[in-house]
Amino acid sequence: MNLAPRLIENEFVRLEPLDARHREALRPLADDKSLWTQSVMRADGRYFDAWFEAMLGAHESGAQISHAVFDKLSGGFAGHTAYLAIQPAHARVEIGWTWYAAKFHRTHVNPACKHLLMENAFGAGAERVELKTGSQNLRSQGAMTKMGATREGVLRSHTLTWTGERRDTVYFSVLEREWPYVKAGLETRLSRVAMPCT
Image 1: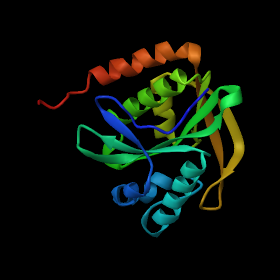
Image 2: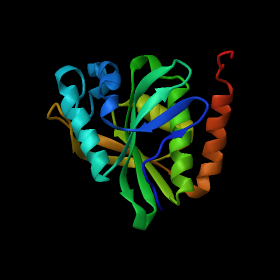
Image 3: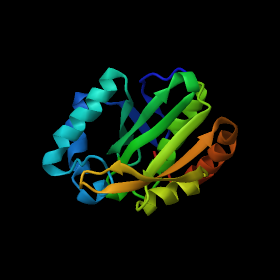
Image 4: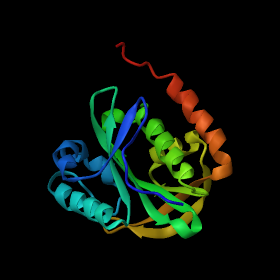
């Protein structure tokens, strides 16, 4: 598996490798405490710069590949997503640190991003793509299930959140041999999106 930072895009979204110019574009989108209820960090208000520096530092060190998500339909940024736990020797990668401003929830943005990220990962030689979320994050679990990812189980008391509480974490995955089925489902959903007239 050979994943490297690069701009990837389709007709719906553009995923730009994170850099300093994205700071102010993402700041107002992250300013919603409800986005961070089960996260290890929060990025609303005064917490944003620490979150952004952590994401940028991990990206620049190669520990993760972060992307600012640009929505082509609205003409503005929508949020953030990343490749984490990149394991070339095991052909395994996680998609995580994904969040979108509330107005992009239950829209084309998430399926378009997941399509791009998985196609890029499997094209780079991945055999397994992992996703995880807090046990109380039913919206994310629903999105992963709807996408066709397999729910693998719950790791109890897995992660310390920024509130000091421990959360259970639900794991999902898509294997390379399952990707054609998942891809077809995502493409069917995206085919229903009304594109603006040009």
